[in-house]
View (spheres, rainbow, N blue to C red):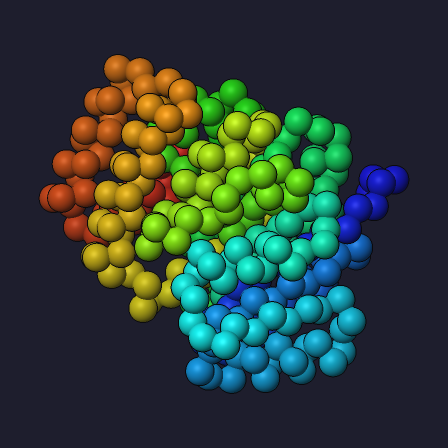
Length: 275
């Protein structure tokens, strides 16, 4: 472990998460890196989520709970949480995912050794509802590779991401104008303030839930992603080469005609297919 031991805020946004949040909390409490606070932002859950969070809080003083009086939506809920974080770094984890014990330590080491890096993530294992691994989603590793591919797809695993707090707060945080792909938008916007980097090993288990596999959600993601890709090029100067234009054209065609299951397979395996 690094001699420097900065505080890390692990931010978990919850909403009706009672079925899986215990596994998520256990995974962050079992991290090898111990100088953490766990910031839990609940968006007015109507199930037993808050009771579970309070049970864990009684046993661990590192846990901070923020409860919204009304449902604000994911963007505003996340923004509330970010404003309450005290750490030098903010690590994101979804309320139904699971972090490998080494995750935070390896990301802190990377960020402390690379002061220009404002955002890092890593590979993630794609899992079924019981966290059985079905495939591993890989991402480009270096700042140059990430910037080269950002107009094709989001090269950062958001639920495995760690952000340098000082630079993150220079942005307007998550935009509530995006019902989906809001993380991709923020990944693009933070490019003004520093570099990217990824770790070449799985940092989390990403749970794919049956209820989330709808055609509307997958296709909606593609349309909003295309808008963000155009924004990355025209507003933030990311290059859009001829090959990128061809890729995006066929991606849009695929969004319209391909079955949702095949689109999801391509998304999970694109980095392997493209090598």
